[in-house]
Length: 582
Image (spheres, rainbow, N blue to C red):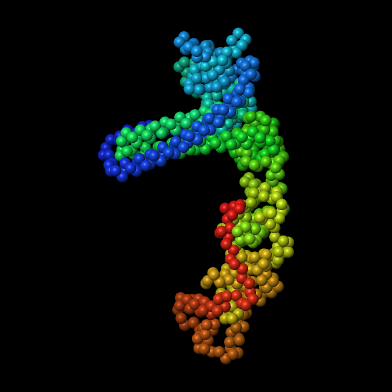
């Protein structure tokens, strides 16, 4: 769940027993790798220290603002002393508290270097000070049923149950243990432990501490990153400068790299959490995506599945957000399950699926404006993704090329849309084409000059020019353009047919014409376009002769378009991956 913040740290390397590897090359290579790791770890540490410094200043400002309120407020019990503590007489000016076992206290900040800063009620007034963290237990009550849904590591609890909070994480989770009172000496601890969504726990502490609670959790995480990075830097420096380079094992190096990877991931998670916290602070009127399933435990809560998109209507509560689902149902949702997208506000005219133009739907034929080619290309809507809030289209001329368009793109002026609908007349013409006239289909072209048909591939059905673009199978660089009207008005006589059978009547006619001209088989055998009697040849030879005969027969016809025909430049879809999409 991303709540664990501990990772195995490699210790200083000791020389291995056995036969040591030797050689200057190995030593140099080890030193180079160590230097690279140290450089990476140092960069992580410096960045973490920068974030920590900024956050510490924020915490000071927040708590100073609330400090006057905290001084006047009575002690709020959120913990208990599990073992009596009497400060050492030589503690000097350190503000240490004396407390008795079972005494109720307010834990303000817990586990700072093994100490907890607390307040206790003394003679009607509050007395702040430090207690050993091992002698206090932070307690919390469930404000609603918490369903772990059988997930490993999660606790299922009922409203009103009391738990001991062992640790809290900035991601919005608390590691808890069932509370049945202090464990008696010699008893086996059989209390269940697990993670609970922090929003389900009643946090009974001062307003000043609640205001900076999340910031302090992030500070703890940053402290750990900084301390761990410093420790790893020291271990690596020791391994390099104590002349153990030749004995450094691959396994030890792997541990160093693994720990460096964890530091990188942890710092990245902290930065993402800081960004998300800033966004969610002003999230009212924004859309958020649910990161995992949430089951409502009361009538005021909202159930949602991972990937659902919710509209945040009230974001004033630090732990809960009042949301509205796409079905119109409203209720409370824990803040830590919501991911708010930057700039995805509902108040700035963000669009949902229902707000899109009616012609945008799966399978719709549209036109895409190519900014690099300064032309429209025919595309098909392949997906309307409600979660990602984008429309995906694929190019008719090459289905492996695609583009994506954000929903919000259609909130702008219509004449600036990169994706445009096809005109009704164009769609009507496309629908009138034979059903086999589709991009990628194989068909057969009749050569008028040589009286032969050759296989072709339908490269594009160009709606704008109302032409079908075909390429010859024997030479894909040679193309023909077939007007829509020839396929619609005279499909039987069109030179482009679905299969060879569609040209059978032409072959019969060409044979009749050859006979009327007195051309015999021997004369025809010398010509490119003549039929040859190959019945006496072996099948393989006959097939090969057929192919070469047809290629030669149609060579003249394929060399170029007939005079006056217009052949547009090929559309380079591959180079048009600008703007939205891949």
